[in-house]
Image (tube, rainbow, N blue to C red; front, side):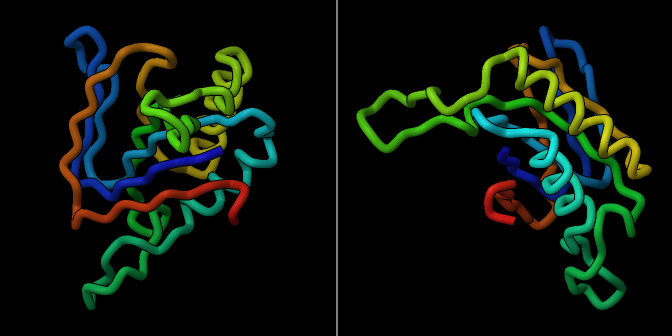
Length: 148
């Protein structure tokens, strides 16, 4: 399971022109599910992301977590993160999980973040979405459950 996390001052997602999710200070999380991912991958990723000290403290050092700042999370499914671009010019999505399993793990991820006390907004699984992000920094990380 892979996530691109961006520290934001605000972020929103629209589907068919209508805002379906919007947050203020916190993290924009793009989440991709790969074949073979499990609830254990979800648990590792959630724990890492919500505890990652990437927000400024009073001394302007990255020393605070999403939990520490009581920030929000906008979680958006993005199957293209599992894409492979090593060969040719067209991405291969052979490593992307099936939509049924991916949606289930996406929803478990959302529920686990909520259980940690984070206010969560989401996109719409499988929909074409327009994401607006006001980056803070910018600060962006790629987190892979297989590497933590």
